[in-house]
Structures are given as C-alpha cells and as structure tokens.
Image 1 (tube, helix red, strand yellow):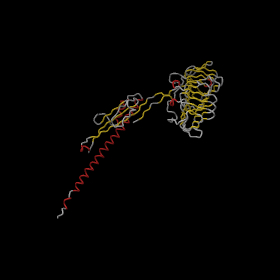
Image 2: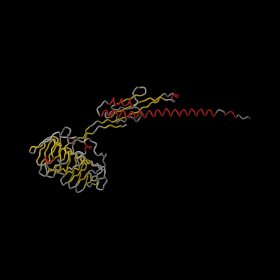
Image 3: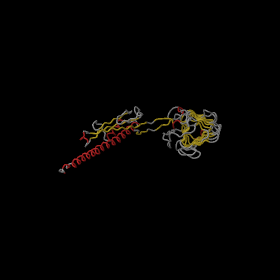
Image 4: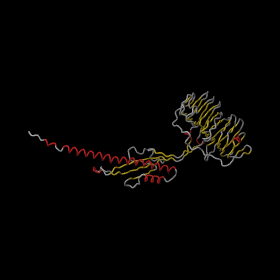
Length: 409
C-alpha cells in the first residue's frame, strides 16, 4: 500500500480563511456596534439636555418648544427625518423605544415633558450581511414644576425645624395638649437620652400624627411617635415672606394704623387697624393689657412678642392677599424667642412663623385660642392650662415653593 502524504495539503489554508472571516466579523461587530453604542449615548445625553432645556423654559413661562428645538440642534439632532427625528411631547405619550419606556405615571401628566430621539447609524462592515444601518431610539422625561403655593411643612399644626438639637420639641408642665386636624413634626435627628422630642411632667399629648426624625422620650403621647417620612433641609427651601412697610404707622389714643412702628406702641389697651405692621424691638404685653386686631400681620424685624399670662389677645390674620393666613412672622435673621400666653378669652387665628426662634406656647384653657400653625426652630409647650391648637389650612399661610426642574427618566 502506498502512502499519500499530499492529501492533507491545503487544510491549513482553509482554516486561515475561516479565521480571517471570523476576525472580520468580530471587527465588524466592534466597529459597527461601537458606533451604535456611541450614538446611543450621545442621543441620550442630547435627549436629557433637550428635556431639561424645555422644562427650564416652561417654568419661566418662555417658548419651551423653541428651547427644545434649539438644544436638540446644538447637540447635532436637526430632525431631518433621515439621520434623526426629534419628538417633544407635553404631556408624555407611550413610546416604543424599549418595553419599559414611559411609565404610566408620566403619560398624560401635564407636569412632564418628554423628548424622543431616533437616529440611524451607518454601518461599515455590516452591509456584507445586508445591514446598511442601525437604529437608535432614546427617551428622556423632565418634570417642569412652576412656582406654586401649598400648606407649609405638609400641613402639620406644629413644626420644629431644628435639624440636630436635643429637646428640639419639649412638652412639659401639668397640662393636656391637643392638636386638632394637624400633626406634630419634629425635624431633629438627635439621639440624645432626652430625645429630639421630650415629654415630661404630668402632661399628656394627643394629635392626629406625631413624627420625629431622631429619638423620642415620651410617657403619654397618643399616637406613639413614628419616624418622619422625610427630613427637612435647614434653612427651609420654601420662599419666606418678603415684607416691607413703605410708610410709618400712626397712633391716636389706643388705635394704631399699619406701617413701621416701635414695639412699645403695642403695650396697654391697643386696637390695630387692618394691615401689615413692621415692628422694631420686642414687645412685652402684660396681664390686663389688651391687643385686638383683625386682618393684621405682625412682622417683627427684630425682637419678638412676649405675652404674659392674663393678657387679652384677639388677633386674626388676613383672609386674602399676599399674606393671607400669616399672623406673626419673624424672618430667618431674627432668632428672638417668642412667648405666647394669654387669658381664657384670647385667640390667635393664623400662622406663627419663626423659623430661627424658640417658640414657647402656654395654654390658655380655651379650646379656640390657637387656630394656627406654629413653626419654630424649637418648640416648647408648657404651663398648667390646657393647650389646644386647631389647624385649618384655609386660615393659615400657604408658602410659595420655588420652581423646579428635574430629569425623572
């Protein structure tokens, strides 16, 4: 039998050819796939920028469609229908880029702007297998929330804003304290032994809800405190009232007109005409003094009210206008302590807003005394008389929340 050594000649050449084909395929995948991936990333960045640009223009009441178109063009997407298409929707519609696109919470919601960019990417090697281009589709959704008003601090009746203080809210004495239609919000995250919320003495405390971000040291609180659903930044993000008085107030006998006034005018028996009072200094209202005013705002530029027991206070905030529901206001740069007391005939209708101050509330025994929302840096509820706070949003100040934009998808 003869051997045929030449029969295997050429096999290596065939293997080399297959290897070259494989290498070309991998090169094609790397080049064309890489181009498609790069285009997708660029398109997503462009869609995000376009959605944010449109949202920013919308909250400023500008031509947001033009803003979106200009931003898309500046990113290389001119909506020519060949290389790319750009679609801007408000409200969003269901898109088909990917199966998980456009969650239903955004579809039809006018607060959101949707940008869909589709682009075609030319291939270099894929035409060998009949693929002349690759398709890219991306989506971005931005929220455009214009300025709006809403109840301050989630509509809680009492709010301690201090972020880290021990005993940020303290309930003591021998009184029963009840909050009606509004909860207690303790922002402090302190874990000191006495707690961010501390209740002592023989006091009791009842409210629709009690939440604290830190520790709670309580013995008779109903319901038991829970962890707050959120932590508030400090200083607060709400737009604080911007108050000024263009003229000086006047005093004739016991009647005062609105404007700039010294705190000393508020002692004795005083009636306030409706309007805004810009008060310089601290006022001490003693037993048997009387301070009455309807549709008034007491803005303490510096200083604060110190209302002693036995005084008769009947103060009511405006029902309309820029300061509707705002009764007593101390700005962030005024950390003077507020002391609120009175007799059984006293009442306060409207918000007490003092974000940098300790606010001390003493009970009067009158269930209608505080028809208010009380906001301070820290809070104290003390005394022997019952404290009842009835919160009704219609009677209290709604803060302006600044415009905001964000990419949500």
